[in-house]
Amino acid sequence: MTQSGDDKQSGEPPPRRGRAGAVARDTPTLAAAAFARKGFTDPTLVLRWAEIAGPEVARLARPLKLSEGPTGGVLTLKAEPGASLFLSHETRQICTRINAYFGREMVTRLRFVQGPLAMRPLRRAPPRAALVPECDPSLAFRGAEGLREALTSLARWRRRGPAAD
Figure 1 (spheres, helix red, strand yellow):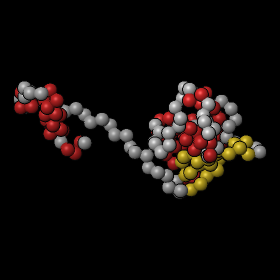
Figure 2: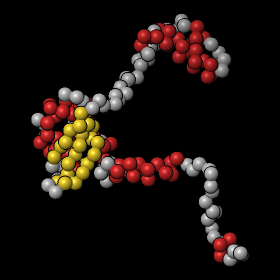
Figure 3: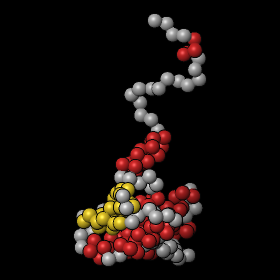
Figure 4: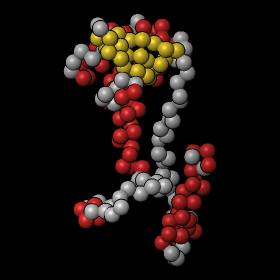
């Protein structure tokens, strides 16, 4: 069987098999599919949850699923055990915040599922820069710039102490 001349002259190379593609090319598609499986056509609610619900609510609960019901949207939140009772009293306020953020009636009811939340890493404050005294020998070093910066950094660390890191 022979190939026609049109097939050989197409500008695109044939797809390669058995080779990994660039991750950045597939990430938006995979992320959109993952959000869509949970009912989030717009991932903003999940990504900006702390900003929308407030830091106290975000510390206690996270959005799991958004489903459309006959009376409106139902947002399922995973809450720390014991916190769902507290949050159930705040339902109207949380729904109002969400709807105000999106500018439309998006959520009318909240549903709570109890379970431990994954801990988010704490943001550490950048370490204070300790001043190196002028008599420190690291400042007298006259060698390669990279080595001089490393020695100065070591001198700062020594002054600050390992407990500060």
